[in-house]
Length: 207
Image 1: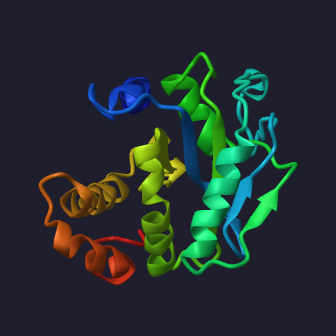
Image 2 (image 1 turned 90 degrees about the vertical axis):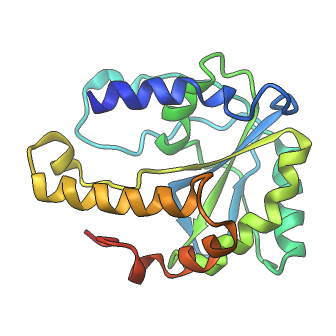
């Protein structure tokens, strides 16, 4: 089913950089479940887990995944963003890793032995802002940092568990646009302007 396929894909995440890529020294995750007025990074050495979901079985609130934080990476992220024109990067000292971090990474890195820093999205979700953030952070990829954007392109839970064929068809059309825009076979030169206009140009972007 959908969930087993997703879990299988996530379990292969650590292998995605390829055999010739540098060893993953740390992970930077931008989670769709954390929005702040300005970019924010977790700076704690040992962040707790934040069980930011509701109505699930009791055992889902007992999940453990004790990955360490990486304060030095958090400061590097802050410097890169500041240098790219984001002067008010926030340091989050107490917030834990939300489920957009620990659920996929528990599957991908079950040993929890790679340090992690979480990065927020900026309220308003302006595409140009986040594309600029991505460009600023790109050098980290050459430093052994795996950068992950965590979130689903379709988040209608009722349709997930039901039989809403119309909602599923809408999601599939948007997902096809996303694959064509961001996939390896897409036109790299057209990718950025297409992403900037995703809310108006992508089919069923707000379905």
